[in-house]
Amino acid sequence: MKKKQLIIINGPNLNLLGTREPDIYGKASFEDYFKTLQEKFPHYDLHYYQSNIEGELIDKLHEVGFDFDGIIFNAAAYTHTSVGLGDAVKAITTPVIEVHISNVHAREDFRHKSFIAPNAKGIIAGFGLQSYDLAIASFE
Ligand code: DQA
Image (spheres, rainbow, N blue to C red):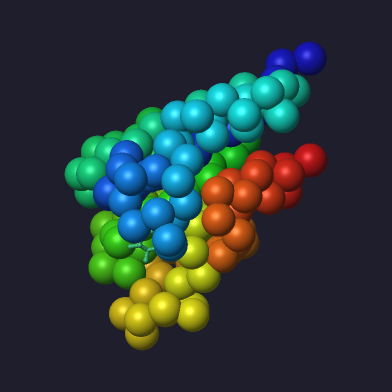
């Protein structure tokens, strides 16, 4: 049987995980964590994409958003600002799980707004990198 195709898409500044504000985002790099996810979920075909550029994130959502089985999306700061990314999530058919490492609702007010959430299947926030783990588990 064909494995389910899932992709983790990370937005701006998440390429710096491990060195960026480690008190909030932890000390692990995403590349290392991604390897542990692939080992933990061998029955899924797990992909990973990161970009700091809004349009590239929109292009990736269009590319995978009609064929893949699930998208785990941390739009990072664009979550709170991007009508374009919100529209892209609405335009595609693959279910999107919105993920955040930190609990955005326990932080500054501007992080409480999400342009992704109205069209997401669900939201997971505040569990550190384990938020991604929980999002993948939601496809079981
Ligand atoms: C984040 C939360 C956002 O508010 C922030 O801009 C990020 C990361 C998180 O994963 O906790 O870059 O999406």
